[in-house]
Length: 114
Length: 113
Image (cartoon, rainbow over all chains, first blue to last red; front, side, top):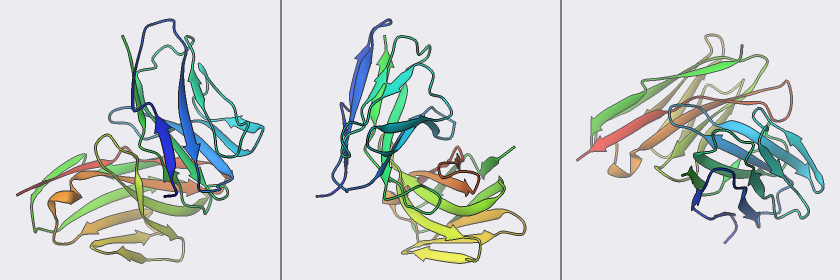
């Protein structure tokens, strides 16, 4: 089945540790995105990528890093520089840009800092 | 400032009843408006996408309306089912850049048997 796979679904991290969230899609979509979701707030864009080996910062990129070495993969690293990393992280993809294209989301990864 | 406001924040209705969720936006220039359904602990799923020229769009028991003049949209759910319990998120796309989506905080809907 075509779709977006995020892993792990739940992740616990100690303060000072970097963690990497995986996002893989087999929809052959060009664009991929990472969002952060906090209770009572709208989704906030962390990073996005339109093509392989290129990515752009979103609204809240500080403390995060990404790579796009393959079209299918867009991993997100939450670094120790992110002051408040506990959140629900969502990966999405679209055929083109989001001006008209539909976004398809993964099931999310919930990160908790202990 | 581009903003999307949704009301109510939460809503409880009985199974089988209808309900309407509201979305007001101050986003310019406008490209399109989307409604998503998000089950607890899962990713959002698209319900409808409407452009400036579309007044109404249906997806099964979900009907979205758009009034571009007043910058308001609504999502009407007919004959609610327990599986409709979820958060419903309104999202407006600007034409400033390809990736400027303005997300509402969502309305949490609970359907009681």
